[in-house]
Length: 190
Image 1: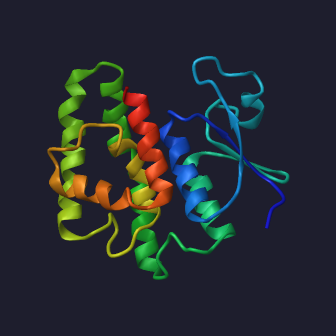
Image 2 (image 1 turned 30 degrees about the vertical axis):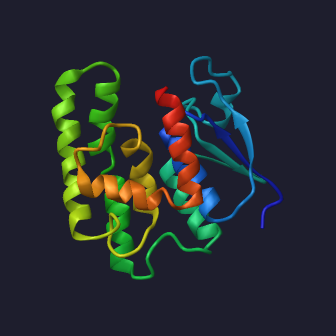
């Protein structure tokens, strides 16, 4: 196990929330270095040339990008597993994460005031809702990385009109790693 995990983090960032959830699900201890997204320090560009968080540091490894960090943590710390044992099921999880920008694109356009994107965002939420009508988690029977990948955005938008999606958020909210993120998202909306 690593001596120290350091997460360069911003509470309001859903990408950081992904990593915080995985770290908590794995039962790992980490140190947080808060990054002000409104006034990014010059040194963050040394950690990630794009200047974005999250960035995970473990010993000499400096790793940006939440999807990459999530996969790394699941491989490096395999218990409890957040990817299915079956190769085909793992591929479907990776595909869902790869296509995440179908949700994040309209989400960020709406956040920037583009009300024309609201219909697209609601269509993406409806797709997730339809998936969750058929199964308890985004990729089937078990909670895992796909759920972690989408949850931080879903909890930051109005989703009450989508019953299965709301039930999913409620189920996940019973997990201690997720409950903390629900509190942060609620605080950000105030």
